[in-house]
Amino acid sequence: MQFVLCCILNKCATITAQLDEKRREFFLSCCFGLISITSYIYSIFPIYVHLLYKCIIGAVIMFGILLCSIEREVKPVRWSKPITVLWFMFGILRLSSGIVTSIEFIPLACIWLIAFPSIFLVWNNRKDYNVLFKSLYHGFVYPSIAFFCISILFAPIGTEAYTGITVNPNSLGQHLVAIVALVVARFLYAANKKEQIENGIIFGVIVSFAFFSRSRTATVTIAGTFLAGMLVNIIFKKKPFRQTLADLIIIIAGSGLICVSLWGINTLSVKYLPNFQHYEQKTETENPKKILNNYIDRIEGNDKHESGIENYSSGRTGIWEEVIRKLNIKGHPSRDHIITVRNGDVGNNAHNVFLQFAYDHGVFAGILFSVLYIVALFKCFLLVKEKKHSAGIGEEILLVQIAYLGLSLFTSTNLPFLYETSFVYYFTYAILFSDDSFWDKSEISVSRKGK
Image (cartoon, rainbow, N blue to C red):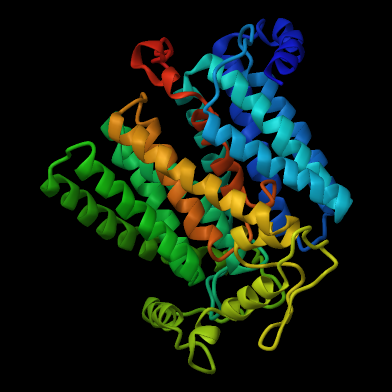
């Protein structure tokens, strides 16, 4: 497979090699940005976009990412057997379910089997993963900053859970989780003070939006990702506990200050600027104390009409039970809906990515994806422990894996062009695909220190 891919990719190399490094990196960041922007469009505008069209748009953008990644001749490399075997076995099951169960699964199966491995192969040749994740950071964080500014200026913070300019607070939460690991990594492992301050401010904005949206999943995931990053600092990077504690105090105090400031800016701006609200939102404003009380009620589950885990989970436990009951070998097409007593018809949404893959493509596919995640997470820990990386990339991909798990346990993040978290998570495999022999520090390109 690598031989065939190299023959095709090297045809493109004759074109892309003519671009200088800075221009190629700029276009790479723009392509990542297009993935983020299209994801925002899907969640901002209440319009239905068919999965096939999302895949076509995403595939075209991924081709741009591939082109911008190639800087020289691509050669076959040694791939990690456990990771690649699990990846391709899962992809083959996805493709099989597309043939046997529903053709709607075929486009994403092809992207999984061809598009992502092609990009991974290019970067396994380059090995300068710091450039890849810097471009990934720019492509996903900068559009989010624009989204934050537009939301605060035009979308009032009112009596309901805040959605910004998206359709619902769950959409807002998934956008926050998509970038939190990238931001936390650059705050905790910053190369300089300026980078740390910038990302500390961005993290404070993320925390504020999670607070306004009252998203329990986003809150737990954001907090868990930050705490995991602190533990990595203490255990693996041997950072003094006092200094780590000081970072925690600074980020808590700073986030509180940013939260109050954003509320004040929003209160003032919506008086003079046009207001953007979806029909289900109420317009009444609230004071900070009332917002805090509503947030606490949401976290504690006091906003539910009845007690019990089924209500606290917003019916997810009932959905999971129904999904498990319906699991089979060949999977289910999207028209085979999940129906529960509490939530009624929830479509084919399992509200858990591991169960979602098992429901869509069969129980063995769900097991394979779960094993793939566990193996990948274990390898991330080894990379951090053995320090076989440069520029803190090992720590960064570990945090991405943790953030992905936090969201995916409660959300079906199976569509990478809709859920940015999945797209960012899949790119950690650009590193994990590489055989361990490639992690020798002397082999890693550090010639681009200025990037």
